[in-house]
Length: 269
Ligand code: BT5
Image: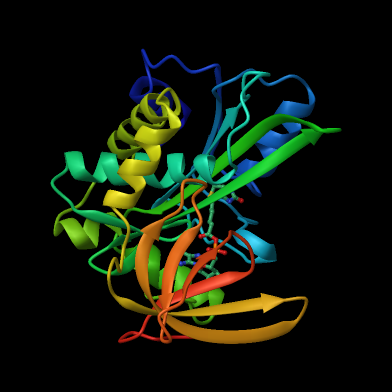
């Protein structure tokens, strides 16, 4: 995948602009720099490899060369629009799910931001808000996808141990999947989903929610104080919080933040 093939793959899509790097630190950082110099709505940064890819809360994300997709889309909200930040993360996961569904794969969203195929993480989403005082200037929506089968072994090698079992699109599909085709499908879906209204996004998110009606372990780490609890996933609140039924029957809404979710049977780190 080079600049020419990326531009050809994305031809005709109504992007605000496109920058491609064969290798970069982090496409979210590139998009932030672009934003500072006036990146338009729907400006896209894509890279063939990231050397300093970022996950949530200071964690790292591996995008090994030749095997994965790394992209970041700039979304500038209309000035009157006040939407929960969760919406943007949902856009990213939904776009990946829809693109995979076109290839006959059934993806699920592990709340809040992971895309799973066959119960394993295939993609991660990092939505970062950029404020101008009180005003939300833009959200940079970053997506990393494991495409080739080697991507997960390479990621594991570099990370040590992954926080959650990982897979790739090619491994789940049982055949090699071309990165530029998947890139086009994901970007086309991103453009479609970002134009949809909040209720449609929330419904689609809930329909793809992993572990619905299943028991999960929730780990929180608030100011260095770790806690763990078990509950059954009931669904989503209108603002994208996760509705959970605890062992004593109490129903609790979990907000975005320092939360980790694991299914009980594959409890990992
Ligand atoms: C995420 O964070 O899953 C969000 C990842 C977002 C990456 C994209 S790539 C384009 C854009 N530019 C960036 O710099 N970032 C975005 P989180 O839920 O915090 O998961 C991070 C954890 O996933 C790490 O601690 C690792 O254990 C694990 N991990 C790292 N690389 C992985 C990979 N390739 N596949 C599966 N798991 C991985």
